[in-house]
Image 1 (cartoon, helix red, strand yellow):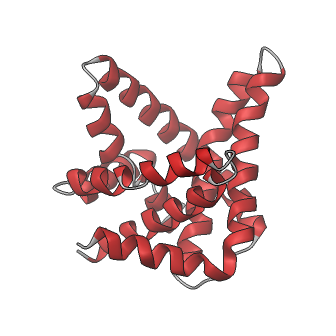
Image 2: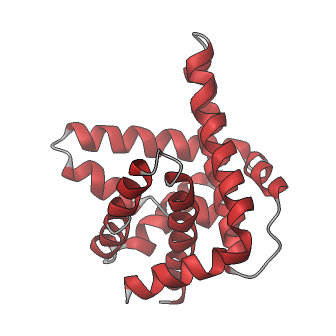
Length: 190
């Protein structure tokens, strides 16, 4: 797959939706980061919000790449299959951390293998958390290196965004997410 072409397509799809996509990503970032800074229970609140909001981003960007309606309210769609999302988020976080402790590389492999879980749940909100995790692992089987390369291609853009007084990062995050949604669509076709 031509990853550069995929990145161009992800950016082109965002053209009419940049401000909305930036706003959605900004609210996601603030909702996950702020509670941890507010009080002693903030980290638990952040943990509980991170999974559903990640799923909400997947709903938003899948709608965007499929030509569906993109609206701010999609940011709350991830709270509907709440138990499934929380279980997936907890398991993914735990397995990734264990893998990172075991010499970093296993953690990266686990994170890449389970990275399509939220897209799978967005496609089928009734799916069980075990099935979502298994399907993500199968979907990325043989494609983890390509997925890693795709994610690594965004690092220079994030660094450039940081140099632009951090504001540029908020333009890169939607681009990265739209490209990952396109990658998910391509994996399903394969």
